Image (cartoon, rainbow, N blue to C red; front, side, top):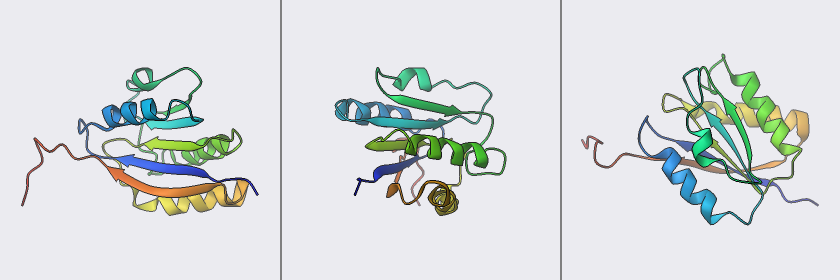
Length: 135
């Protein structure tokens, strides 16, 4: 029996610190097989070059949110592609404009294509504590 790849979803508003958090996590996991699927809402990926390390797999999906119809096929394809690479960890950094509530649908699509390859370990939501308005 092979181990499943641990999958983490990283969310938070624009500028909250998702990429900084991810950079630190990747440093801690530098001895592991790690992949990142990075989603930028704009035309050009900015953060991919910041986090890219030698030996790390990186897929950038731009021009929309991976959780809406404009990129969902690309997102499922990226998850499926990573399943073939025997990663220990896959981190998905979503756009700051994303609504990730339908992640289960995407994982079901991957399960149909590749089997039960991911251990969805949860969503990590980064909050900008300085600018967050408490109620």
